[in-house]
Amino acid sequence: MKIARIHEFGGPRVIVVDDVPRPEPGPGQVLVRVAATSFNPTEVAVRAGRFDLPLPHALGWDVAGTVAGAPVVGWIDGAAAEYAVTTPDRLVPAPTTIPLADAAALPLAGLSAWQMVFEHGDVRPGHRVLVNGAGGGIGGFAVQLAKHAGAHVTATASPRSAATVRGLGADEVVGYGPRGRFDVVLNLVADAEVARLGAVVVSATLSDAPDAHFVTRFDADQLTRLVDLVDRGVVVVDVSERHGLPDLPELHRRAEAGDLRGKVLVTP
Image (tube, rainbow, N blue to C red):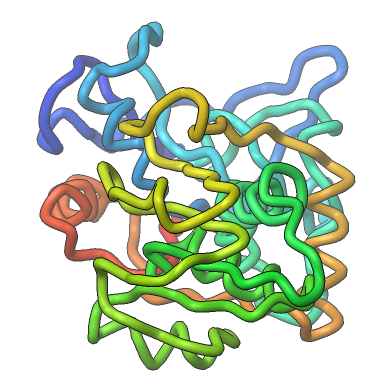
């Protein structure tokens, strides 16, 4: 089977598509036939060696696929492949109202947004919320979830993302360097100076101070609730591009250049 891996840390060129035997699930594991994974910017840091991981390392965390024919979505390791093994607790039933592959855009970005909005931001009806960097995958979900919570949402986005962000429900879309005062700031822009803008600041960028930054965790119940919101039409899964495994080096190059918008799917 095909699988995207790195055998050394470095630039995008270290990503290779290997041919390996199909994995066999061990005790307590299941075999996932992968329909798609998605690109996440954090994988650039993984590829570059910012984390101490054993090599070779298989890319891909988000997964949408089937287990014994049943459609599932989840957050696993090594999803940039034709098949992957994991434990059932890392998977939930996939949405039924969107194509199965599109569901791969949901887990990591959706859970990040959920935890920013509802746990760390504690967004309530009537809150004024700033989503700083709404054109990315997490930002798009954060806009929708903050609106679902009853907030007035101001979003920053580039000109190419502004119409999409407005379509996702933002009340106002402004350029970077926003002004004003907000009840909650959800920051997705590295090194942005947003501390003065909000009573509560929650950040999902690696460069921010520890008191503002949080690390997303997998939560099957939250992912199930996100799936329900998708099936009810409350949350839209916006897929901006679709690529194959051989395109991953180019996606990493474009991510480093700031040339990606929204959620990008990668299919095996």
